[in-house]
Length: 273
Image (cartoon, rainbow, N blue to C red; front, side):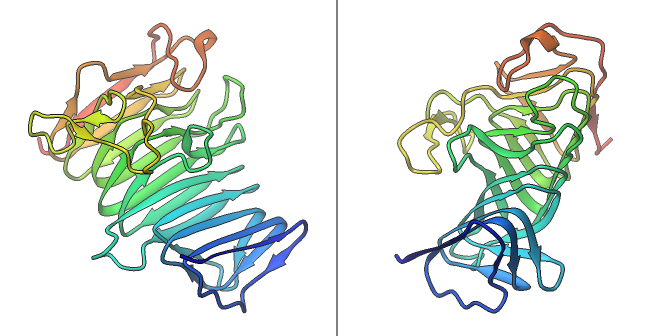
């Protein structure tokens, strides 16, 4: 497979460019300007202080996407061939609000070795992922307001047909909403082993293929003061060891670490009733 990287310390405008490589990286210290849509068959890395598209809509297509922006962004992500690649692997970061939509199954996987797959990095940044009719699998952390303080107000919203949680979903004072038209399952991963197909035996879970665990073994949804709402049209299942903590001890603040239960509200809703 061929790989191309185009990097600039300032602005980078590729809206008229044609890319025929399998893997592509576009990195800018300033504004990165894309065409109306950008796609490759393999890996796509998009990183800039700001990302804009010539038609106002950032549409990205690849097998794996690593996206990072220094401002708020709204992106649509997909894969080129739904039959050959029905699942997209995504790692996305924005300094402000991050709004993502997809028409594919989405595996949230850390692709840049920071243990986080989806995040906003300022105190008020909200994170939203909608994959209508698909499956969202949280393999690495999802964090809103990841500013290394404990009073951020960023919210997290995940909406899909089915949602599988194998790692931490975390906010401070912002709310967390997890909504599935079908089922929601909180799974506990032991190293790379999990009963993915629910047949009673452990399966290998190593989506990124690096031979190491895809999750840090913390299937937790947690806030300090924010409310947690979980809505499943079908079933909601928690495997032994998974946790929902609305009101963790702020002194224990750290992605994947949890403290004393507090007074925030946890709502579990069966939408079928």
